Amino acid sequence: MSRFRLTAASRPATVPRHSSPDPFMLTAASLWIPFALVAAVGQVARNAMQRSLTGPLGTWGATNIRFLFGFPFSILFLGVVIAATGDALPWPGLDFWPWLLLGALSQIAATGLMLAAMNERSFVVTTAYLKTEAIQTAIFGFVFLGDHLTVLKVGAILIATFGVVITALRPGSARNLASLRPTALGLAAAAGFALSAVGFRGAIIVVPGVGFVTAATFTLVFALGVQTLVLTIYLLARAPQVLRDILHLWKPSMLAGFVGAAASQFWFLAFALTAAANVRTLALVEVLFAQAVATYSFKQPMSARELGGIALIVLGVALLVAV
Image (tube, rainbow, N blue to C red; front, side, top):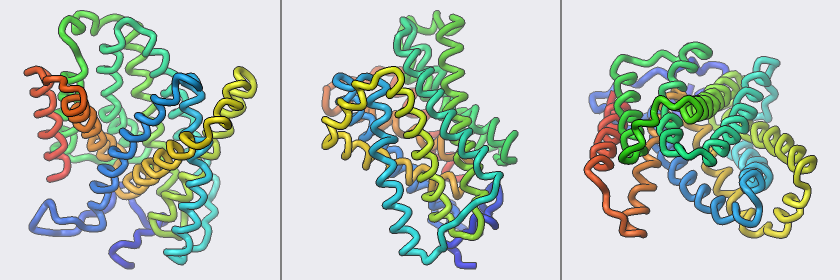
């Protein structure tokens, strides 16, 4: 078997490490690191594009753009991958579909919960609880996929998560941490996103007889297809005018869809190679990117609390990558 061609059928729950004296040396098993970093950058860009479309399209309309306009690009990606790798078009067994539906529908439900949280007065607190996604992903990955994490990796996840929570909280908001509604919304949304990550990884690793790139891309096509179908039916029933508005704004929507599909492609490639908890913890660097943009573009100085939180994120992510 080629070092870089891990087949879906032979991929274990956690890809074995290649022995190396340098823990930072890039191997096939550690390709998930650059994949996740590229995906995080793409996600920041996609979120910025979606925010610009939220005004004319509403929240669910802007959300559907990433699925509706991303879906055709995922098919294009799959065609390119099939041509480049020589893999045959796979067709998975029945065990693929429950994982796929879990990932696709959990992500939509989590988005809805997150949007509900935006209407809360304690939105900052809800956001802090939302950042427990990495911890919940580790739990769900262990329960459903048998993703085993070392003690050091668990410690890295906890450190990075704690850093994000500290960064998210604002002075005076800690007193609301025990409030029932923001706590429930934040934890439930985090659980939804965690289940989606585990579901997508579960679907990818059961695609038989192809390399991990083909398995990840194939899964992405069907994930975006299901999500496009569900949200489009919802909008047809509840707000058909929004779909017409989306078509009128097809040029910016096309770009947002491409960037979103590209970011998802790299998330799925990372899920194919390592436990979902590792990927979602490294994804916390998105907070660093957003903080850098705020500091540089808007000249917003960072407080001692934010600096401390960022230091913990960097420490946690560095530990995760090193062990």
